[in-house]
Image (cartoon, rainbow, N blue to C red):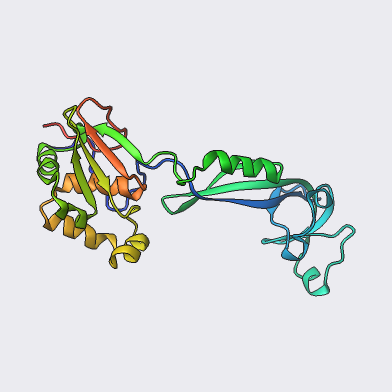
Length: 246
């Protein structure tokens, strides 16, 4: 009954259910080189010049510091700002950087060379629901027999909804489904809808007799904002998820 892979930790370094990005964001950056032959750097344009179009930024001389850049060629810069921008360079390219969040961590997705291209990328990566897919089908090998029997016993038992998962039968196969409620199961989200963090929910699930193997899988799926989870003996195993050899 031991898993062939270690069971997921409470705060996993990686989550095999994670797919796609949330909160996609576009930021206009300037690719700058300077006369000291230092590596190129990226800086956002300062707020006082944020109105400048791309063609008034690209291939113009600039001043920059660790946080922002200011176009110095053909632009008036207040003295109080001029003193704070000690480095000089040339804007080689205007970049539209696309970033997104996965499991509350921000990642760089890619760079485009116009706002329209960046907006098109965000559109392709987004759906109205904000997710690629919220339904997964995985092998029952990821569960112990005890966990499967527990799910089957809770089909039609509405008390399960208080534990934020609701099992349902799949009559045409040997599988079973599970609807996850209140996802994602992050502390911030659960405090808003339940008034308590995930550890409280986890303890309630365990106290209700939910096997730990099942709790671990449901947590990983709900953390990745999965809404429907199908367990089928004929489905493929999910790489990185614990497998139980009974």
